[in-house]
Image 1 (cartoon, rainbow, N blue to C red):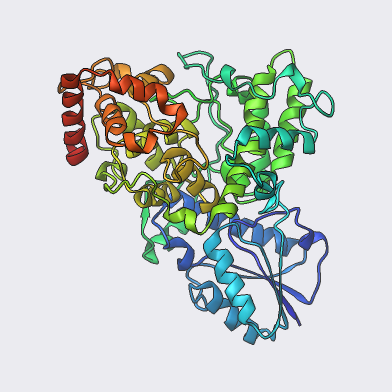
Image 2 (cartoon, one colour):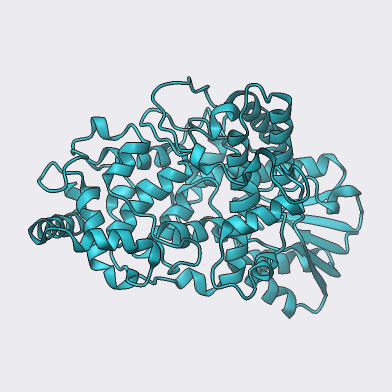
Length: 512
């Protein structure tokens, strides 16, 4: 009879974890689909389906290898829909003497399980998930005594630490640490973008169960042709496809946007990684190995841009999360208070860039980082939306969104709500940047070249209004000096018109 119960959360699907090296008749694994996890925010239907499907596949994998597993589907009659209530019942039913769990990556679950295990009379232990390349506290240690947390320095240290793309112990391959300047091309129809490595899975039964349970979701789903990777085998297939078909143009066009292209040359690996089906190091090593074998076709800039996102940005954001929580989730340094417009849930807006970025998100539970940062995030910040509302939307709508990576990107990078911990200046722009990096503007109702008037791009007036209204926040920010100087030189009459139009947009977003 099992004496130890080991808990596995929905984003702890690490096939390589040392727990699974051998079977033990005295160990019982527990996994559960719960309303506690579906209801803390309104999630995209594809996100709920992806996690439940991946969890079921992982449970089956464990059982096939001889491990004992209790799995509660959402509609299981014994499912209390609450993590600790389920655990208490199982402890009694199976005479459990010891409780073990892997450290959660979300603060709320970490607190819940810590308080729960501290209250238990039986032995308990929390172990590492054996997934990330840093511990929770490594980033804090790295930046100890520093006033700013520059990601680039951390990234370089990680390159050295893991000997990734290094010419020797000190110098990077290619003579540069960062090829970001090479990764900003606009896609103009060429090169041809291969179709994504999709899957044609029938998830109609899963969708029916979720609907009958009354779980509130957003977005749409093709129940007969669900196309996200939900097993380790799927994830490896997507990784191989990325290397063979997309990597050679990834870096060039990683910031590009097009109304008719959903994924461009992006890998679509984030869900497989964030659920831990794939390990970050195996992804990095596979990509680098493919590049080394195909250097005649693939430039180092394509590879470095990809590696930086995983080895640098992903680990950095997780480090910021554990360094700054729980206060980080309440940060609102710009004191933004407005509501998120209704069209974030419908895509019904005349702004072409917003319409396509939101519709794509609703249809596919996906948008790449520049769509999130410089379209939907940019608009939310320029309209001075409360970061709580922005957080809830981003956390719910994207298939790869877990709080440890979402909140730091939203409050830090996108909304500047942390006052400069992650980003040294707000990532805001007028319509000119959107036009530079995308193919949205040419078919838009609004003119990107106009700043005032009924047909002027809303981003233009919103941009100058934002700088005008928030100028006190930026007066000591050296990176904002140029923009503040340009604001000061604005013709007063033109600035008045810009502010007036911006206020109309903010107060009546549904009209635009």
